[in-house]
Each structure stands twice: as structure tokens, then as C-alpha cells.
Length: 254
Image 1 (spheres, rainbow, N blue to C red):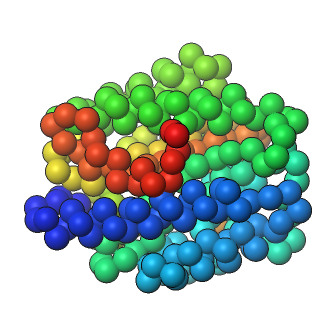
Image 2: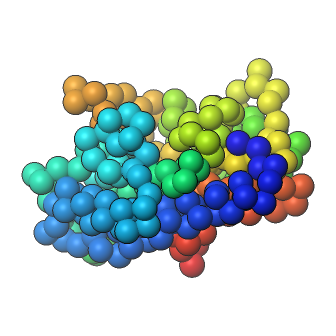
């Protein structure tokens, strides 16, 4: 959305602080032996305490309040009482919500307990690449150029990108234009980032796959060639200088 008034800016700041705080607290709460459903219900209580509503639940009738993906699940993992977190699991939590007519989105991947399977380099790559991508965004920059930067940085780290998942505009709804802020360069895409707009920028960095495919449950995405995928996401306000990271309360880079 375009931010044209102080009230709109305050609305986006408030909902973004809520989703960022919820993500941070859910990450802290996640423990070995806990089910992803238990973790999801904990996050739902936090959103409720702020008067916010889960975006996937409200918008898409998703069977959970946050998307919680474990190990080889790339995205949109369904919280389940049968999915128990184990030492060294790779987990992704994606929290998006609506508050007072404004929507915001953020997510992050991390390792539960000790990194016994060496997932941390993939986690670090995703987090660092997102930071670099966002640092290069301002009004007038080509969306395709940021996609190119993400893919080049992934390759430098020895990884690939998922090409059919993307960042997007956000604000008055969960997904708005621009809809395809991809993790690679589409040369035909001449679209540029616009000053004073809010977008969710996300990285999808992978060990083996380049395409996410849907499982039979109609939600969960996995890599087409297996392996692991990490995602990090922030909602930002584009300016003519450095973007304002609206979801910074998640403490992603602290």
C-alpha cells in the first residue's frame, strides 16, 4: 500500500510491531519435545492479546494461526499435535496478522536446540542475504535487480533459491501489488520499488531445490528436489534512502 497519511503510518507500525513481537516470542518459546500445534496456540494467544487476527486463518482459512514448517517443509507447514520438535530440527515460523484494517507479515528460520545436522549455515545465509537485499532497496530500484542480488548471494554461499515463492506488497490486505518480488532476476520485469509503499521482502534459500511443490494436504510446500529451505521476511516501508523496517521488533538481526 501507499502510505499517504500519518494515521496509515501509525496503523502499519502498530500491526508490524505485533507480528514482529509474536514471531520473537514464538521463537523463544519453541523447545525440544513441544508440538507445533502447542507453539501455534501460544502465538495465537499473543496475537489475541493485542486484538490482532491471524492473516492466514482469516484470509485463506488456513488450519492454524501461523505457518510452522519443520525440516524438509519449505513453507506453509500446518501446525499439528503429532509434529513434535526434536533436537537439531530446522524450523520456520511465518507470522502475519491484521489489526485495525492494516496487515503485516514476517518470518524466520532457526534451529531447535543444538545444531547437530549443520543447518546453521543455511539459516545464516538466508538471514544475511535478506539484510543485504533490504539495504539495497529504495524508491526507483528495479525489483528484478533485488532478485538478482538474492540469487547471486545465494550462489556465493553455495546455495540455490526457490523461484516460485516471492515477497509481495502488504498493507490493506495480506498480498497486494507488487506480487512477484522474486529471489532471482526476471529480465522482462521492468517494475520498480515505489517510495512510501509497504512491502514484505522474503528470501527462500535452499540446499537442492529451485521449485516449491504442494503436498496432498493442499498447503504444505516442499522442494522439488528435496533438501532444506530457509526463509526470512520483514515488512518494510520504502523511502528514497534506507527502508524503514516495520517488523524490527522480531529482533532478527540482533
